[in-house]
Amino acid sequence: MNRTLRPLAATGAVLAIVTIAGCGGSSTPADFSLVQRAPHITTIDQSAVGAGVADSTAFDAELTKDGAPFGTLFGEQTVVAEPAPWAPKRTDEVRRTELNFELPDGQIVVQGTSPYAKGNWRLRAGRPVVRAIVGGTQAYVGARGEVTTTRNADGSYTQAFHFVD
Image 1 (cartoon, rainbow, N blue to C red):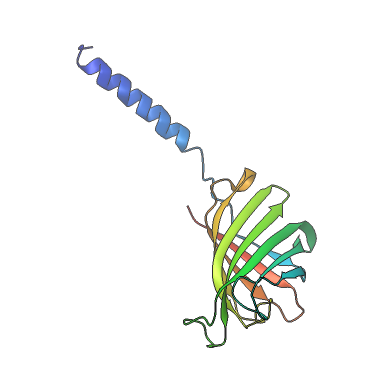
Image 2 (tube, helix red, strand yellow):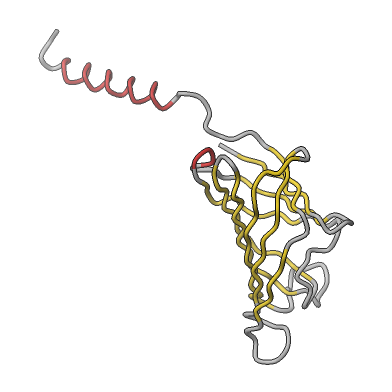
């Protein structure tokens, strides 16, 4: 082989190996849904008078998948604005939420903002809220997508995960 072509051939071989190694199948998890039991909520009053900006909650809840136990949800919400100018009701406040889904095969981290009725730490029943999947561990490493959370009439929540490449 020509001396000037050898480096190009070697580079091409390395690129082919790297490309093939990176194509070992999709690492995007399949979409799924979980049912979250009613959460245990602890309220932390940070605002000067009554409910307001900076107030927060910490909560945890059991998760099930197809009726069987499937981990725990740990979360935290903080009021970041009131009223929410873009919310369905002008009395709503904006809450920043972080959710950590501790599952048997790894962790999924979710963040986002959404409107809540002032002073009510639970979502309105039947009104879905969509938040971003910002990462994960183990089976969910590099995960991204969104989670749609819907409060059910019985106080439980449906958490529907949609992953993207």
